[in-house]
Length: 286
Picture 1: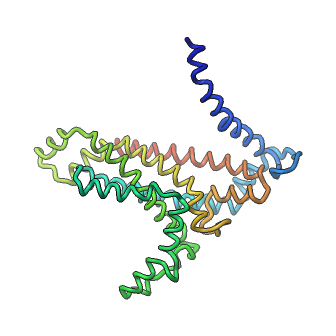
Picture 2: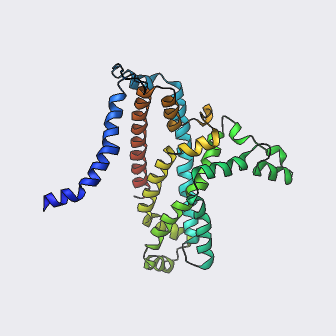
Picture 3: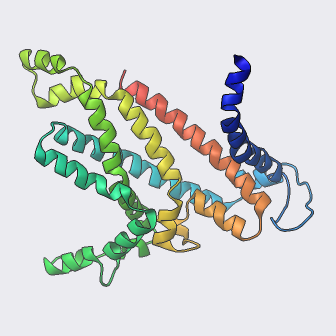
């Protein structure tokens, strides 16, 4: 019986081993070499690549800082917006169903399509936002958006929130619909208002959904490679360079060994951030 179960799982195990485990092990090996990705031979350099990434790489440090800024804005903004939309649209009516579909629509678009849409919105000369500001007499508020090195990453974060908030809204609606209506009836009997019902009933009961949304949003934030390349071009400027684009640029510069070392630090950063977020989510719902 056990052998039959093994045979049943063997194709999946073979694919997982071939496409995930083997490349991961190879990545660890290449991180200790100076391989350029093309040559037949390479030299071992020990841990010097990892040491350089952690201690002596200003470009990688800048990308990490940008990624953390992007992550913070997207996680907070996307989670809050998704929860707000879910609370407002949880009751199934014709209007709420239409709005759910409308807010979910950006999720089915490709990252390249979203990048083109927001390039039009952010264009400093002919973009939607600056045109509207001019029309309503607020031309002094016009901005270069993606052309501003200090704030460009935040404008990309806004595009990312627009892209995926509807998807997270669906998760929250599923969580809210699982809450027993008796809890709201008891809260109403005790004189609780809408905010108190949200604070003491909805928020604690959607804790599993919140954990899922935060974890998924974090991964999305670290994987926003194609959206950033679509908005910023390749290679992106310093203000829009994140870890994924930094690794890609290093690889494109024929430094595969060093790119592998950057990937290891990248994975460690994702694991650390995810762990801290899970701890914070448990404390917030305790």
